[in-house]
Structure formats: C-alpha cells, structure tokens
Image (cartoon, rainbow over all chains, first blue to last red; front, side, top):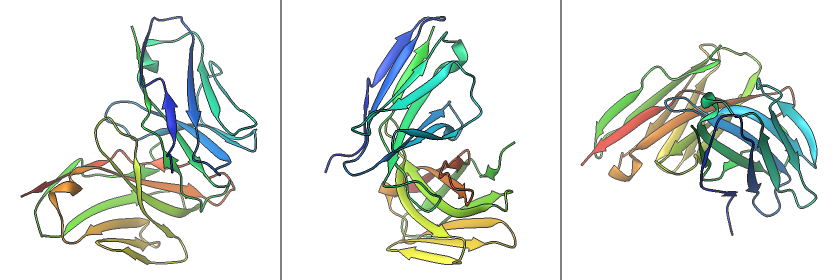
Length: 114
Length: 113
C-alpha cells in the first residue's frame, strides 16, 4: 500500500511569495496533520484536519492556512513568506482523531525561502 | 516551552550492544507516547508506542519503558544494528482529544560495526 505522499519534494521561493504544499494520506486514513521541522529541532504541529474539519491548530501566524478535501487529501498554504519559513514541512495521516492513534509521516517538502 | 525533551543530542553504541535513548516530558496531560526514527531526506517512521496505562511495551528488538511518576520514558534497542543508525524522536500526545504530537529535539544514534 502507498504511504503518505507529498508534493513537491523541494521548493524554492522568494520572500513575500505564496506557497501551496500538497499531501495525500494513506488509503483509509481520514485525519491529516501538518508539521514544520526546522534544522536541529523536532517537528512542530501546525494543523490537524479530520473529516474535512479543522480539529487543531498550533502556534503559527495567520499566514498559515490549510484545508482538507472530500478525498481526505490536504493542502497547506503559506502567504507572505519569510526567511524563517524555510523548513521541512511534514504531513502525517492517521485513521481517526484522538490521542492514541499513531500518525504516519510522508517524506516532507523542503521549502527554501530566499 | 519544550514539553518533550531529549537531553542527549547524540549516542554511539557498538553493534550488538544495547542502545538506550531517553526522553522527559513536563505535561501531565500526555497519555500516549511514541518513538519515531528518521533517516536523512525521509519523513519520521513510526517505531513503537505506549499508552500511559502501561509501563512497558515490547516489539521485537525495541522496548519502550514509561515511568509516569518521573515523567520519563526510554527506548531500548537490543541488539543494536548498524541499520539502526538514525535520528530518534520521542513524541507525546494529550488526552484532550486532538492527537497533535509534541516532539523532542531528537537523539542521533550511531551504531558502530
């Protein structure tokens, strides 16, 4: 079975631009979460969606937004990019929503803002 | 505020010996704990988890121990293999409903052949 897939793999953007990252969860998984991992740190939670509804939001500015589609895939959008947004963006999926459900991660999208 | 801490950035172990990776947490609401392994250019791979109602969970060469009173968990790998060399992240989630994970900063394990 295919795991979590993310696109694109790498992306280079300029400050002030907008970016859209995409994620397809494991088949049968209805929850998608987004994390940001900067160099030397662990992943930091950005958003969680379950059944197309936002179920959780981390401590990120309003420039970050996301949505989940009827097929459970998801997009993460970041507006007005800053140099500090350069990071690995990880998508994770799980079967349901709740603390005891393991999350499975995709390979990530490496975003570089210049 | 780092709610999950991995105080050892790196660990080197001889092949065949035991690797012990440690993790501390501060939030008493955490009720589920996970370990992930990460290779360069890949996403974290789920390894093993433990619920707060247990103090030990074992899966093959991997065992996770939870000490709730000390807010401490550890991952034991026995025997260690060169393929285990990776960055290991400890993560926790809270019983408040959402399962967003709080991660530590990771420990880089190197298994020396």
